[in-house]
Image 1 (cartoon, one colour):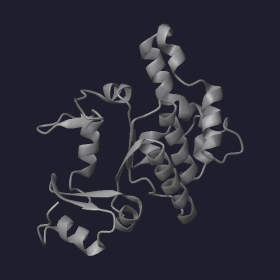
Image 2: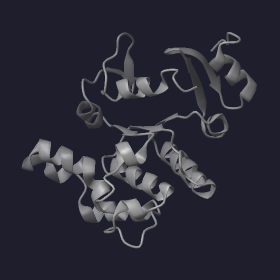
Image 3: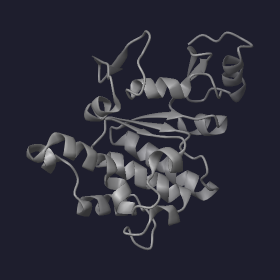
Image 4: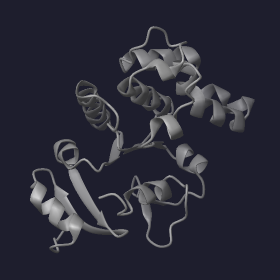
Length: 214
């Protein structure tokens, strides 16, 4: 539920804020990031819950929004390592592969629907071949038809080997999309469920009305 610490956990994994205790394991090895740049270089991407305020530069083109992270890392890496990052042509191909619908990828991204804006942010991360993508409220502000497309995209990425961590306050969305569900309450992990768990059991864990064993 909102305020349970889900977003704070994701931000700590991504290097926005420090952990007080606990350990992060990435591909079976301990990992600790002091800033988002380190997390990105380790193969972690994060899609924020508020796309327009935190994920997009609305006055820039679709292509430029897709290139934001790659360009930032390329500038930091220097000319010697710049070739490892996507070109604008490669980005446009990614946008096409993800079926981002726009009159032109050179148009301002603010003109796109919420679902297409979300897919453009996904393309930004796919250009860096991520090992883990963290989606915060992935279908907020997206119409019903576009939601199905985002779920399909996440499932397809998971099948191809990218780990997906989805944070959502929409319980039917979690029950329908997740293979494993972790419930947080007051900053603590209180329960873990596999696919097929009932809505009632998840809500009992989330509200603290009943202890649930992992």
